[in-house]
Length: 193
Image (cartoon, rainbow, N blue to C red; front, top):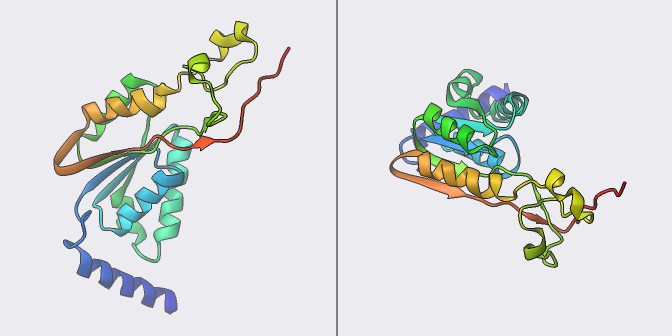
């Protein structure tokens, strides 16, 4: 059948490329790998013969969903049994530096760390007043509620990734890729009570 032929053709190609691609036999940790750019990195890493791709995300549900989507999308290129050996999931609250540190301890030595974790930054960019709203993702119009609504922008996008880069056990020839995400043109307004 056509699907079987396509699978064997791709498998032959991947076998021919094994050892010749930059990720062949490598372990890749993608923090934020359950969606967006991180999911894309995980997928391409598997297609490029990485021996293990570890997807880290904020919940077991997100991790399981990403693993299932990768398995479904790559079935024609990589067998399901092979994918089960090459994809691993980890749960981490990337806002908590201690949890990021524990994640790095759990995964051990890796070849590449890719950090794409974080919510979209909702700033009225480029008109956002950084001095007025440092430390908030939701600039409050009622400053008396500031402490209740403050979420440090740097928890995920800076401190979490810095901890990961500091504690990652990167093998010789490996890399660390850190992203900060996107800025949204959407201004978040708080409801006034």
